[in-house]
Image 1 (cartoon, rainbow, N blue to C red):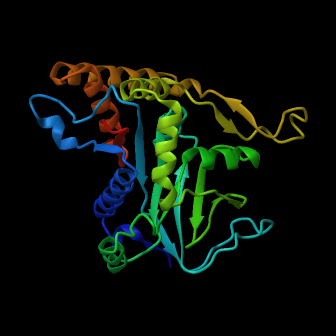
Image 2: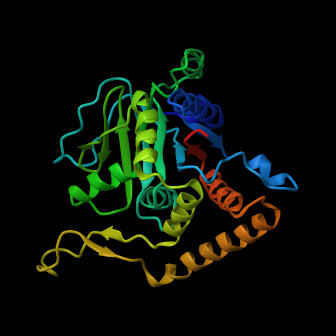
Length: 297
């Protein structure tokens, strides 16, 4: 019987522990951090304590509480199960949903943001408390970029759609056919972000603009083609841009973003503050934490 982690701990509490430790690690290498707080949107004057004229990158951390499993039920007897130790956990991603969680996170990453899924490698509230008290919430979590998931699925010829992420204390896999994923270790996160900021040397306000542009793009979705006997010359994977009935969805979402930006801009101290608020609000709506990371003054 799988154990739903939402019944054992709070996603809010887990997210707070992850955010606190991410900030601490980034500050330990001299980086400046400012997390987006939805409560600030209620203030009469929007202003975030971010040096937007400094080199920096937006960082998005998506929290996932999945299920703790005792055993793995094989859906395809022809495929060997991944080699997992005990305990192990599972969460789901849908890579085909237009403007869904995965789609937005991947496009933000492609637009230049640092983006990671974070999922706990513990199951109980007591496990979280012990990790929190010893500053090991991030160390005892899976850190995984959306682009890593997408790349492994594409390399294996897998179509977009619902997929399972399985992981134990050391390794992680994306199914249907098990493919091992390359994780980011907590101890490497801060230096990785610092190196990318220094190499790119892009101002934070321009980085936010690039991410906003990337979110407006419609990502191509991999689909499984018809049976080979019907179209023998069709490759195993083809790419499409979406169906006609979904054509209005990107326009509506773009209009919502534009409206939200105008509303925030009237109250924001600067254009960059408004862009940060728009991205932070959208990230918060899908359960993700936005952190502005910049070089020190």
